[in-house]
Length: 298
Image 1 (cartoon, rainbow, N blue to C red):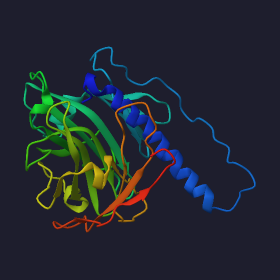
Image 2 (image 1 turned 135 degrees about the horizontal axis):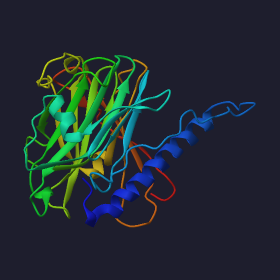
Image 3 (image 1 turned 120 degrees about the horizontal axis):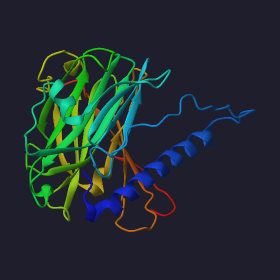
């Protein structure tokens, strides 16, 4: 959920996310030998997605993923599945109906927001997340909220899913905003920017959940071996953690973060990287020394 009084910070975060990608590309180009010609890129399908005219959810927080036969679109208020060949709409339901179908119980007075969805070809499953919040509170960040996690039972996103709802911060009840989602061969990783009051960010939170547990088609999804690393100091682990999304069978548990997203329009370019170790066990740990990439304006 993006509160109006910090929308500028979140927009800046998105912009910095693009810069992070550009920075990473620059690093790769610096160590690769020159190539003779640039690859030719073409647009496959280009079609209108879902708008928020029916839900009026603002911002829509659009997210999507491509599978073997489908494009799945997940925005605030709507979960939609398209045929990726002819872009026909196969299914379009509310986000609350999506979670109900995955056997995740959400309070009737709760709102849900910030969708993420990934298709993992290594296991042929879809993974989706959102957060809930107190829909009747003047400042929802004063109240604990939940991560919502769903996993498809197979490669077809229109078939059955199973899921689970769990406290974003089981230790102190901080509120998780701007959730991110990643995965590798070992685990699924969920992070949130933790708050206690909209003007009081307290740290970056991170969960590691063994992937093999989540692939068992039961509801609620199995998270008994999950590891919660707490609300971690921004100065140590960075801000707005993005766990890596790895489809190649690797299990590095890599996490990338900004050293300081700032609260102004000035550049903030320090990047922090660390790793979740043994994410496939109940005793996952973090690498001891985050590795900083320092930009010119950090």
